[in-house]
Every structure is written in structure tokens, then in C-alpha cells.
Image (cartoon, rainbow, N blue to C red; front, side):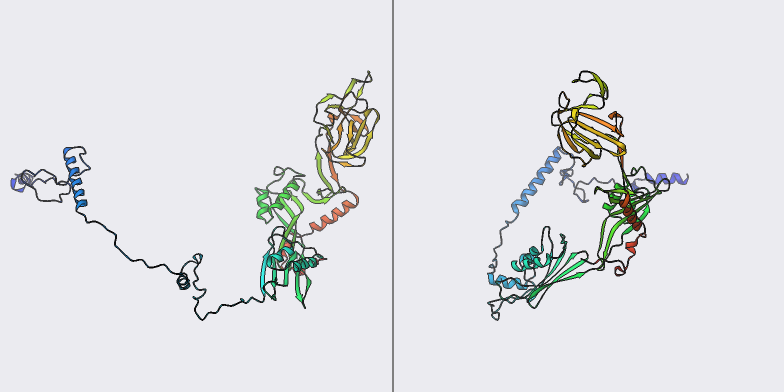
Length: 505
């Protein structure tokens, strides 16, 4: 027989068989097998298995009996009598707080003082500091007198200081600081006298009021200021706004620059990524180190293709400020005619039968419907050349516009302008009526080119402001001065004392 056969016979021998493993019940912990009638009874039943069976209910009753037995046999728990300490009296509490450690918010005196003893004698009058130095902050609407009275200065002395400062121009802005020194007072019932007052009255002036020999004297301390403009250039790139802000231009100046360019080109459609922005702004630097940035002075655009722009803000002869090119030409206005009244057209331009005269003749304008007293506005900027009675036209206003154009407004009930007055587009110049040869309230509107009537519907009013004469010469002189500013000039001034300064008046 082979070795494999011998192995098989050996496994089948009864003496080598393992005894079968006994099934252990839940919680039996491998106890020896029981014999007798309780051999198959589990003393500890797993209540998580065979729920609802007879064995499960027996386990539930067993668990309940055990819990009841533990509760019934447990000893009672009674409170343990004790003695609590008596609360502190006020004197004891004060003494304890002086030597205890606790938050200051709860009244701790830790590190401040020791508890009072018999060696401490009360004072009839506490001593005062001979000099009190304060730094006050200017609030919205505050004046010098208000600040001093709030600091403890008497009303009469505060008014005297305000009178001293009335002779100079001050710019007290909210948030500014004022240094105040108060002196010794003769008795606690009176206000402390003012010994010294110092503050920044203007960007170029510091003011000090000092008491000398019992009198307050005013000292003006000029501060040298460098007013060299700040010039910043850079490439437009993907975004004009972000590029200018990254170059250090303030946000409000960038917005003003974009509005200035928008008078000549469309932003951003008319600007290329390779174009260069050229910005000059007001910039002041004091000898004490403070810096102040003002308004936009010059807006330039250096284009890679097309005409570059050089714009500077200037007030024309009418006192209106706008952006002009280096040639002296301003922004173009117009492009369409504003309707003089909101009503519809009742009679068009051309030959018609006159409703009063009874025969056909040329109607040289447009008739607009409208109620009596409806406002009439100018269709474009212009100058009043006539305002009064005009025969069959009744009350009439005539305006002269740029480019040889003129307009007239007839049959008015009332005129709101006078000859020689400049009017803006949309400004009220009169009111609808029925004066002259009229069958009812309406507006008769005519348009002229070089003195000859034309169809108003064929006109587009386009005007461009321009400087001339002495205004143009002054404009170009100022522009040349700005263009001579080097890039980053104001930032390169490391020593303001060597730059141009401005002394207060």
C-alpha cells in the first residue's frame, strides 16, 4: 500500500478523532458542559436574537427581575449635612478684592491699591495735575470754540480763541487732531485756562496759540509745499481701468480720465491694448511729509494707430468747463434735434391752404399741437437774437445756432428769455399760446440756414466748441507747461525743500 493510503487509514482511526465542539450560549464564557434536565437551558439569553420567541420572553423576565432586585436592595441616598460660610461684609469684601485676582470687569482692584488701614487719612481736597495735555479729534460740524469747550476750556476764552483765528483761513476737516494744553486753575469750581493750542490749519499752514505773560498770542507757521504735478504713463493692456489703477492712479482720477476720453472716442471700443495712457494730476507734498492728490489736469492717449489725443480741461468764454484738444477744439455736441414740445405735428412743411387768410401759400415750418401754457424748449444750444412781438407770428423767440443755423418759435403766450441770452439744449424759452394769426394754441416752429427757411426735419444740429484769441493762447501756454512735466516727477522729489514752494497769504 502506498504512503497516501496509509495516511488515509490513519485519519479514519477512532482514537485520532477530535471531539465535537460544544455550542456555547451567550455569556457562558466557555463553562464546562452541564448535565441533567437544565443541560439545554441558557441562563443568559441574548435579547438581540429570536425576538418574540419563548426563550426571548424568558430572558426579558430574567433581566427585569435582576433590575428590580438591584433597585430593591440598593441603599438610600440622603443629603450630607454641611455648614456654609457666612457672606462677606462690605469691609471684608473690599479687603478681599484688593488682594484677590479676578477680572477688572467684576470690580477687581488687583495691583491698584491695598486695603485701607488706620494709617490712611481722608483728604478734604484731592490734588490736581498742574498741566493737562489733550489731543482732541475734530467732528463733523465742529468749530474751534466747540472743540475747546468740550475739552474743558471756558466759554469766554474759547470765543476769544475763535476770534483770533478768524483772521486766517482754516480747513478743519472731520478726523483731524488738535493738541490742547490746559494750565492750573485757581480753584476747582472754575474752568482750566488754555496754555497752548496747536493744529494744522491748512495743508501749507500750522497754527499755534500760546499764552505768554497772561495773554494768548497767535503764531502762524508756514509749511513749504511742492506743487509739482504727478505724471503717470502706462500701457492699456487688457483693461484700461485695471492698468491705470495698477500704475498708482487713484480710482476717482481713473474715472475722470475715462470720461474725458469719452468726449472724443468710444471707450473701450476706440482704445487698443497697445495704446499708452498719459495722465497728469494735481499733487502736493508738504515739507513735513504729507501728500495730497487733487483733480485730473491732463488726459492723453498715445495710440499705436490713428490720431493720438491730448486733452486738457479749460473754462471757455461762457465760464463752462470742458475738455479741449491741443488744437483748442472742444467736444462735439448734438447729432439730433430735440423736439421743442411734446405734442405731435399738426401741419407739415410745404404748400397749404391758410386757415385764416383763405388761400394757398407756403407753410415754412412745422405746427405742433399743445395745450395752452405748455413749456417750449430750445432744440439746440444757441443765443437769443429776438424775443418779442413779430406781427402775424405773435410772440416769437429766435435763436442763432452754430454753423449758420437758426430756429424760431412763434405764437407764444409768454416769453421766458431775453435777447442776447445764451440758452442750452432743452432749456425752457417760452410757453404755447395763440398770439398773432392763429386759430388756437399751438407752436409754429421754423428752421433757417444762412437766413433762408428750410424743412426742420432735414436738419441735424452738430456743434463743436472751440477756443480762440487770448483764450487759445492761454490754453496752449498751460498745456505746454503740463507736457513739460517728466513722468513720475512728483514721486521723484525726495527733498521737497528744493522744489517750488507756496507760502500762505
